[in-house]
Length: 106
Image (cartoon, rainbow, N blue to C red; front, side):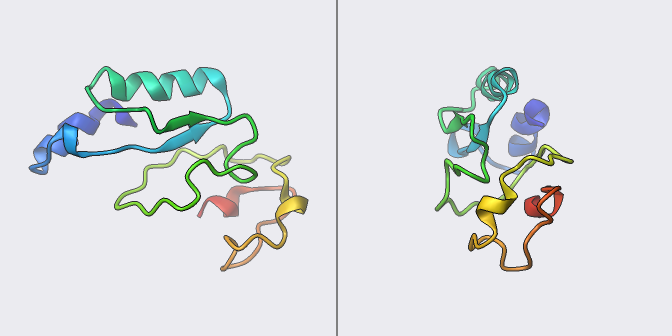
């Protein structure tokens, strides 16, 4: 997703040095790619965190407010900790089914 990020920013009269990216990944190979892609484009990736628990159980950026969001969630995950999160405040529009986290990403 970051392949065209530098181009997108400059085409919209922005500067790459003025943006910040945040993220987290539970798969180490994917995390390394997520760190590398912005870095080779001169974008700081220090806030892209490796988190083996996943963002539902351990949100590395819980209080973050963002202007734009790019997401590539792990769809069709059945073991996402749904039973532990039934009363989580993030489900203001309804609790995702325990066996499928897809609705949790919306």
